[in-house]
Length: 151
Image (cartoon, one colour):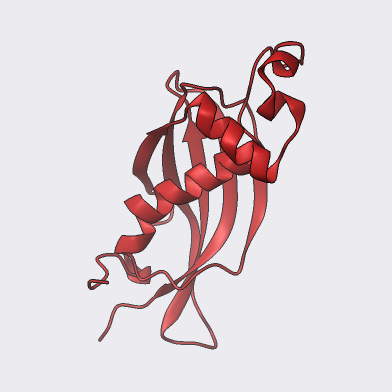
């Protein structure tokens, strides 16, 4: 991996970064759900059409996985990320449907240097996924550890 271009010191609380977009297909929704969340409205077109959703929708966990992939490709692999100690909140606000294009952004909510490990800091971020209509479909709030800029 090449040298990171984004360090702990580069986070500005309140600044939002666009990390990427991804369009999801019905086949992808069903494939993910068959493996990890095989509820009828995720895997069965007919049952889904009779559900409160009126058709197949992505599992919330699939939505999170797509958000994570966009974060890794569009941001984390270019940063000094050291992983995450956890997620505090996930919200699935609107169904993600076949053909939807998700756009993911991340906003720094809080940034603090580690008091016990001077080589890193902790950043609380809020990820947001919107669909092609601009509707907010999911949010994730959690923490990430990032390396400090070398002296």
